[in-house]
Length: 190
Image (cartoon, rainbow, N blue to C red):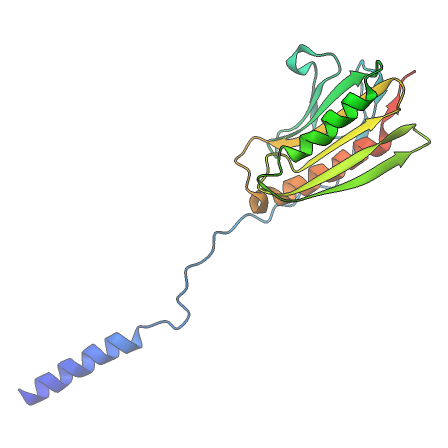
């Protein structure tokens, strides 16, 4: 009887202490390490007062909201878009700039930070701002460009997914590079 108790106690102690894992911690959620091919750019063929280069991975959808020269540059593999809006300048430049500068602030509630960079390209007669939005905001980047006399254009990145900064970060960074390429290559047709 004594031997049975000792054996039973030994088994309980071995199972109780022997099966404990010192490193048993819940694993954090993991996200895919997404990699995209190197971008190849080509000139757009849109009937608008501007031209720019876009990525070959994208496709252009015209006349968003039945407005001429409003474009959806759609990336099917990323389920994301760069939305382009065009406005003629008709003694309303100040109002257009104020509206464009308010747009990133709409994401301020969810954003961790909003960084702006001035953009000037005198060769293409384009001037504006580029905004990077960090955090779980609906849009990760936005810009506006103008020639200050006739043309005004805005652009925004959006994904067809719940905003989760960590999970969309690779795609957002890829689209930000394409957005910068749009800004760098944009020319006005006059």
